[in-house]
Image (cartoon, rainbow, N blue to C red; front, side, top):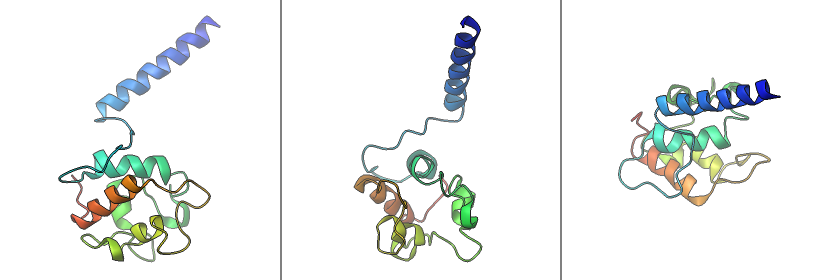
Length: 127
């Protein structure tokens, strides 16, 4: 039992250190960011927590990293920088296009949707 506790404690420490070394956690913003929206700081945590469970490659769509988000699917991009209303991802998370995302999951909170909209409107930069 003692060895199991050490293993768990060591694993938790390693995860904490790796998270800190990678520049933060997967905590989602509680509010819409002001100023420039950062993919890594603001958008990626939302996608990792709410989208990657299904879009970690299914149907050719990966939403885990900036490069794969911008790559879109083999059929088409999902982000049109500067134009949320033409971006498939935005249309799906707002329910303007069916099937609305996430399928079978909780709808994103309004501040999460607005964060993604702002990021796309600001040019969907990797900052």
